[in-house]
Length: 89
Figure 1 (spheres, rainbow, N blue to C red):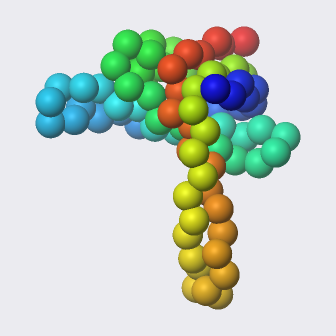
Figure 2 (cartoon, helix red, strand yellow):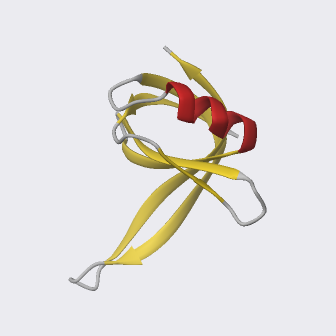
């Protein structure tokens, strides 16, 4: 479990999955860089209602890293947090 603090860098987007589960996604800018954030169910409902670009936030969840290659064929790593708790500053 990790905890990150930063600023919401993109307005959250919400969608409903096939089974009816709400999913919210957005990016957070921290001192270490950008982190993609994904939230589900109850925490996603709260995020969709209160989060906007520019709001300071603290998140807790599971951090995952994924490789990707650009046009330069160099492997880069993206960070994605599966958030289970949030605190709005």
